[in-house]
Image 1 (spheres, helix red, strand yellow):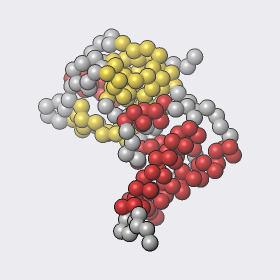
Image 2 (spheres, helix red, strand yellow):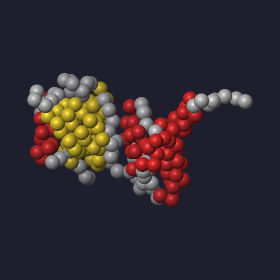
Image 3 (cartoon, helix red, strand yellow):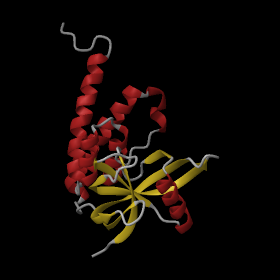
Image 4 (cartoon, one colour):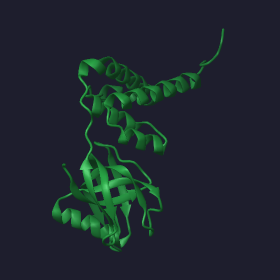
Length: 208
């Protein structure tokens, strides 16, 4: 079984693969963790907190998270850090413990079940079209610069990272092992968002 050890940063947020996240790090234990990751050139794991708090307490994380690779670090005179990370690989926590100041875990990479593209091609096309219309309604001046991927997994992470979803819905998407399942969920959300947008436009929702 493929596994590796990883320091964890439990947060009240969900990090998707390919998504960037800005962190303000002030607790000593997490500053030490960031410094160690930089020195060893390794990622840490971001997990949604299931119970507990980000500060002080020993938080209990959800079992599925994402590796976070550090892109930029700004350190301030008082020791605080501004850190920018990007999500890469999803993982499942096999077990975790507070062996030191930080939570560490043995984790297993989480991969999607292989699905022939021809079986989900129509679903991919539907979500791409919905997402294009969604972006056009929100930012019409930028539509020429958008690149919407055809790869099912990449498409789900782009859309999921853009929509303002409930935190548990984001965790549900992250934990899903099928791109088709995530696409169906996101298609439903995009349909709702587009319907709300059309109703809020001038003249929207009126009957002759």
